Amino acid sequence: MVQEPRLRLAFITGASSGLGLAFCLELDRRDDFDMFYLVSRRRDLLEELANNLRHPVRLFPGDVTDPVWQAELADDLADSSTRPLIKYLVQSAGMGRSGLAADLGQANQDTVRLNCLALTQMIQLTLPYMDKGSHILNIASVAAFMPQHGFASYAASKAYVLSYSRALHSELKAKGISCMAVCPNPMETEFLTKSGQSAQVKGFKRLGVESPENVCRKALRKLDRGKDVSLSNGAARLVLALSKLLPHRLVLWFERKFS
Image (cartoon, rainbow, N blue to C red):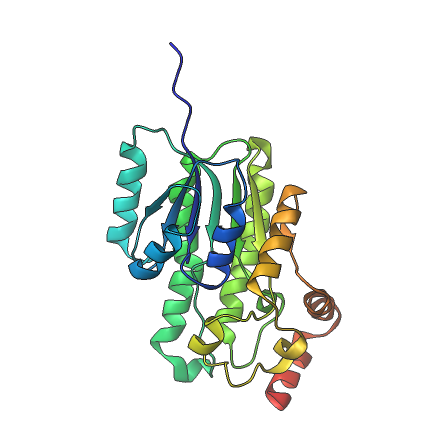
């Protein structure tokens, strides 16, 4: 008996704006998947986006940290008669708050819950629906390379994303599944406003604000070449080099002194 072909999905969290939106638009140019599964808390923006994509779209509005939302998604994937195959998983949902950790309170926990725990849970939930040729793109940051004064929880959470993604890439290689950590500099998105950095991009982060579109295009090119980390510009590579050469206590002193 001949089985029906599997429905190939591009699954994107944080799809309504910023880098998630850029990945939607760029992946929409490709023909190696059949349908988008798009996630964001803002249904209205998802609906607007869906009207501008050539691929069919299913919307999953909600909070990826919500256990009820996760359970509903798990049931949808398990009950689907289409035997879904996740070709791309792009984890762009994330948050960060600028300020001293002692002053941020609950925001510290919320950052770790979204950037680390939910990201890990989403991989555990979707990995059974991946196979040879599937790709995971986790959005980390240049902040992952070193601790940051005044951005402690965010930098630490992105260090987790970077380390976890590189280890996953190694572990999944035998199955033909790749995992990439995308490490952009601060980008021209609403994240700068929400994180409290819109007035000024501080410290090492002054080295190069970039566009989501450029970050996305370069990440996909490196993904096609089998890379496990994507840096988008020279400034990010400089920060990586400095993180290896300079003692982190000196980096923290510089951030404290000049931020």
